[in-house]
Amino acid sequence: MDGVKAHPTQKPEALLARVLLSASNPGDVILDPFFGTGTTGAVAKKLGRQWIGIEREKEYITYAIKRISAAEASAEDTITLANKREEMRIPFGWLLEHGFLKPGAELTDAKGKLSAKVHADGNIITGNHRGSIHKVGALLQNAPSCNGWTYWHVKRNGKNVPIDDMRRELRAQIESGAGSATIQ
Image (tube, rainbow, N blue to C red; front, side, top):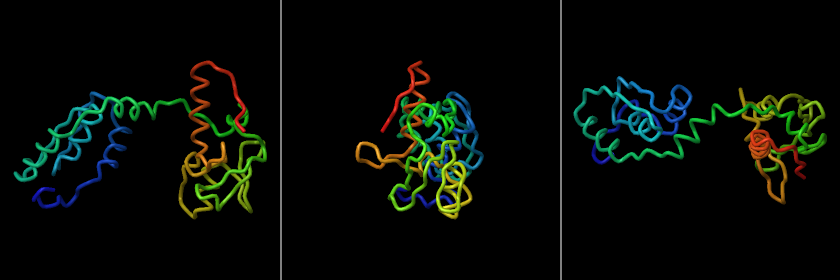
């Protein structure tokens, strides 16, 4: 940090971006009473939020001012990321109902090592596990949770792609008023 000692509680910008996106809207004011090197201010500026920072260490204040001055508001990030949490929810079963997947289709992890079959009721089945894309993904990874949309993949045009791509396509079709489509 250009000769400034590291702040003892510095947070990664990506983490703060997720927090600000989930807890605020563009134009809101973000208060950080332990401002440090200005990470919150820089992220707030990039996401179209106002900010108030409180810091007692002069060297951190000086660095924070430079950092925030250099931060650029990104209209694309502000619009795209802020609207993500407002997107229409798409249940996994809709991929079947709209012809994106068929019962018996094989889903794999990103590396193609673990697989599951899609059941007609919208559950997936692998070995002794049966349930939602999230539940089965978590069980296979021995993890407390799993985003099944990004964990599970399907072969498409010779490539292994996340089923989240299909969800985005279906959402776009529904929002545009277009009908269903079959994806092989």
